[in-house]
Image 1 (cartoon, rainbow, N blue to C red):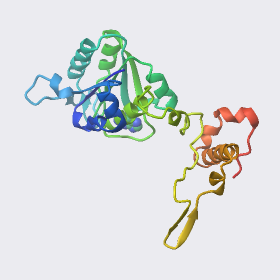
Image 2 (spheres, rainbow, N blue to C red; image 1 turned 135 degrees about the vertical axis):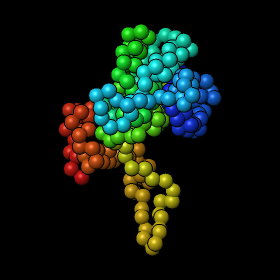
Image 3 (cartoon, rainbow, N blue to C red; image 1 turned 90 degrees about the vertical axis):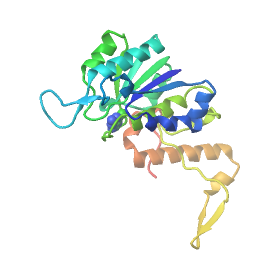
Length: 248
Ligand code: 6GU
């Protein structure tokens, strides 16, 4: 999978050199290149923004550096390309959406700053380059720019590439895979004391009764989802099946 990220703060993306995603890049599973938008400016000050037509607060990113950067990336990696534009006004990024994006051969992330990118850039990408342009949001809050959102999205997408996460089972057992939150987990010691208070591991997990453990974990997922994310229960694949009692 080919990924390009365009930003005026390429150092922000240095985190993609480490951990699982960094290893996947070194192993050749992810071909990721970060570009500095200012390399596509031609003035002495490397200007990327200007005041908005029609007035209003803040600055807007100029179309020319963006069009040159996108054109450059298109020549570097020709072929079907999806342009992901991180913005609070985009389509919600979910596990389902990550699973859709992992099948794309080429993703380009355009990190805007300030009040956003001149809208004509998206028309250029769609019409002249033939790219699929998709504004995407991490949630209903505002970040200063797309960089942190790209770190999250690349990690969520990258870990779905076969071979990136060592234990493939850990992919299916997780929160949101299957529409429910994850069950609580415990490790040794079984009896643990701090400040004179003992906290025990739920005895069922020490019972060796695997079907009882599976039932308990499923019940924990339902209770946790009901408490923290009741909105998820309406669409969960478990609702219709057996009308499970989710009262704690
Ligand atoms: Cl994807 N980008 C920015 N800039 N802000 C956000 C966001 C994305 N998601 C929520 N807030």
